[in-house]
Image (cartoon, rainbow, N blue to C red; front, side):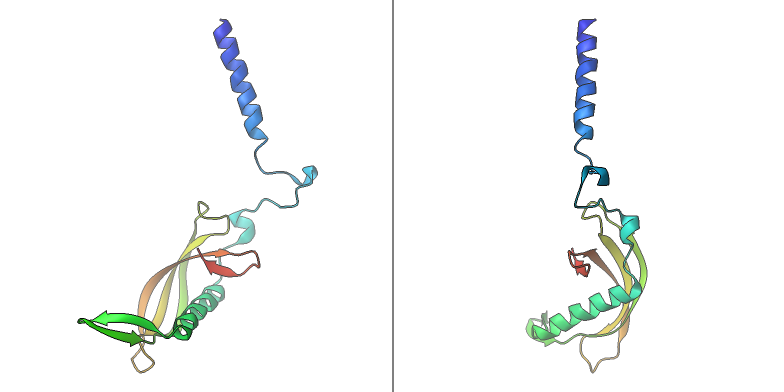
Length: 135
């Protein structure tokens, strides 16, 4: 009987101790508020559009994409024409503000080619400045 009491007491102490490691409330003077996916909200289509266009601008600023085609090295200069958000799914394992978003983009490997639509997935989260960045 004493072993059961001791085990129950230890279990209660463990549960009480673990509860102190949760999010601090505002009454305790926490300077960092607890965030949730609901309070952050998923990125808008415009947010994702801006994110993708910045990404393509960075590729161009870096000199394009180096590809190997039939054993020959080629530099492609992809051009983005349009971005549509299909859906976003929260990924709280990465960060409270992390989302994996499915997009339909219209792009070409160069400005001379006809744009083609394709599906794309991107992982984004908000940084300390509130901007959407890749995760």
